[in-house]
Amino acid sequence: METLINESIKVWAVFDSGISPVAMNWRNRLIKFKKVIFTSNSTKGKTKIANLVCTNNNAAYELEYNHQNFAWTLKKIMPKG
Amino acid sequence: MDFKENNAKGIERVILHVDLDSFFATAAQQTNPNLRAKPVGIVKAKGRSCIIAASKEAKKYQVKTGNTVIEAKKLCPSIILIPADFEKYEDITYRFIEICQKYSPLCEVFSLDECFIDITETEKLWGNAVSIALEIQERLAGEIGDYLTCSVGISKNRLLAKLASTQAKPDGIYYLDQKSIFEALDKADLTDVCGIGDRLYRRLVLIGVGDFKTLRACSLDFLYKHFGPFWSKHLYNLARGIDESPAIPTEEIVQAKSVGRTYTAHRNLYKKDEIERLMRNLCEEASEKARKMQLAGRYVSLALRGAETSFYGHKTLKTYIDDGKILFKICQTIFEDWLGKYIRFCGVTLSMLAKNEYQSIPLFPQDQRRGNLIAAVDSINNQFGDYTVFPAQLLGTEIIRPEVTGYFGDKTYRLKFLHTL
Image 1 (cartoon, rainbow over the protein chains, first blue to last red):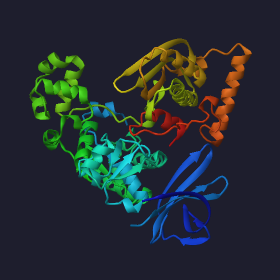
Image 2: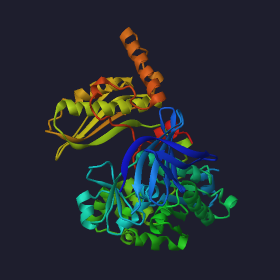
Image 3: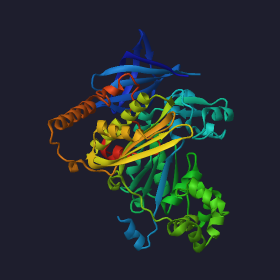
Image 4: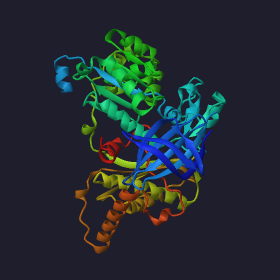
């Protein structure tokens, strides 16, 4: 149903009224996103963390963005089907 | 905008009760589209044996909160079990509260997924109560998640508004007007309303009262004879849908009377040192909460539960404390009276709270150093996250971190000190 990953990734995103990831590079694979279906925010101490769930035709991907060090992490993958 | 003033003038209130539908499960379905339209059961963590929330699809199979996993699987073999994500739920809650607070300053946060909104004075700004309810539903879907839904009950008091939202579920709106009150009450079970818990319900059943119609037929004298002066009036009013309690906004929430933390372990804890580590963990959280609220307490209680044994001990101190280590030492002394073989549940509470300025100023250098150490640790943990620095006693254990509970038991702490809206 879902696979925990917790790996560092590179993300292309639009920062407008919110954060909209467009694509990511994970293990040298380019994965494009079609839609952001959920965003939430949390904090670790004073550091703001954004959690975003992005989808394409194959799966939903939960990403985490650290506002302090601008790092992206792929938290989990939820394949379709 | 005073509730009592309106009451005195005979102005009928308009109260909304907004209740997120199957909150935890729907939040999981929002973030994982594969789970949508499927029966989902939320467990506290992987491997836990109790369902803490069920999706509406699972509820069709009679799965409900409190079922064990085994029971849930018997009722619904295809149920999908998902571990809870309290950080997500907490974020959704704050955003949900922000939406509700837009419609009236008299917005009471009742639990993690319920708000009462008194729109008596503000209704006209948005048209009417139903248009407010519709707007809240739309905003929830548009701003937080399109799979999230809520049910809204509208009536003249909190009791009836909550009853209405229960009967509107899921994703419905129910305006309960004067002439439908008895019909709505008679459709409900006694325990469906706030104010009748299991114990009161059992006492009612013992005297032959199993529904609201029968309860309404009881005179006040009869109820007085069986339940005394307070509960008789309470039951008499409940049966008639009478409730004068106001919606209490966050700013008016009274100061916390206690701080604490409880925890049910994954397995039975037999060894003294592992029980004490658990106690220490909970003491650290309780005392940190107190310090954040600038409070200190002098009544310490410890609750432990094993298989068939329950233990409760307490101590009243002469001085106020807010130090996790001292709190733990007191709990250790209380623990000496425990005679059980093992525990599964532990709860630590610090009460008789007062402002921490009432603590006596430490005279001795070691106490002053201790105070400085605690302040430094708090500062580091505030900056870098809970338990960045933690007592050495907790080394090697999986630290139990603060998390929000479904009934939002520490809402004073969370709404006024942790997340100011």
